Length: 531
Image 1 (cartoon, helix red, strand yellow):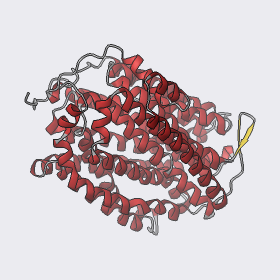
Image 2: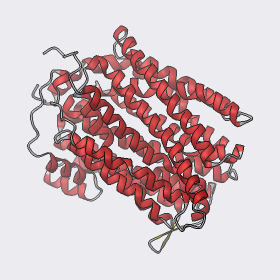
Image 3: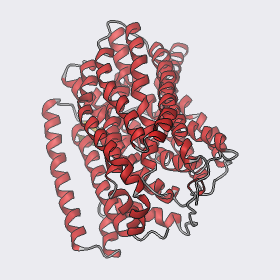
Image 4: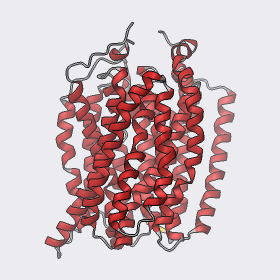
């Protein structure tokens, strides 16, 4: 069956609404960065703990719940799922206004992570059923631009709201940063209504691959969650008749991950000792909490893949037998580590280095991040569509390689700026290049799986990028900054040391991607997919 190329009625509106959802998710997620200095002063916590809040605590629950909601997105109404999700995370964002210590802020971030878990799998799957394949680079560019808008908007909104409240209500028990969380939460409730009323498109129509109705999406979603939770996954093993090989791999992976996390905790504690955190009456080493969360996430990844091999052999085969898809996911995870490490601490760097207020940084850095962050994806998205027509598959890779190969070199120049004006001028060039990787890489990944597998593939990608990227990037930058007496510039730049590995993976991806995309249908048939 030939693929349709006409953009159907409502596609642009759907793209706009889903993109706004992406923007809101990044706004509520990233607002912590601009408010960090005030929160640190009020709650007496350090950079490593802020990295925990910004990245790790959020990352665990975002990654974990992206798996069942990703499966739910493959079988249920994606518009309703998104509406429910944004309502939940908006409530959780508002909870931070009542935080008087690390524990309540951590609980708020936990809730935001759970709520935002549906954003990528449900949103991207929905958009792909509105837009034809040859225009998806543009669609992903719009969504990537929305991410930039949310990142920039978090700085603008957070900085101004916090400063305005502190200035006009100096004697209020409600601090400026707490008021900013209330303001950030409010728009989500309006967007939830619009999402609920959005039309659900026919799944697989734009790819010419009819997809049958899922008879029990909630049961399947619950099964995914049970299959990945440590302990419960063994019950799933018994019920599904897992082989001895499954048990051996699972237990060996569990032991190896625990050992690795203990070693990482000891190394981090020796490198940058931190006072214990008080959580529910318990004193916990923040480094132990960090690596326990990362280890839990790694175990979940192992359990997910093993569970998928038992419950959905075609999806497991399509995903794991595509070296191109695996390399693309690794590239995304490593680059996310860089991006979140930079974005999590750059506002604090600007305030400390150039003696700027939160509102000054919020306006300048926020507007710049939003505007330039939109420009980069809007250039590389359509450009990758054109280049990909000339070099199918690999065309998108070369656009990504340009972005991710050049940006670390520009970063050295940016963070050596002598004043804020020079910093912002240089950051313009940096942002245009740095943000250009999202549309081509994302479009490439979604072409490696069948329409019915996009939700679970997105969830697997999200847990990798969240645990390895968001969960490690900000923490490592904060860890290094604390060890260097609070110096943020060298800590931010240090995260770019993963760039050489990214470049090597991109070269391998360029050589492999078209072969794996062409073999998609055959991989699915060989594994028993009825197509």
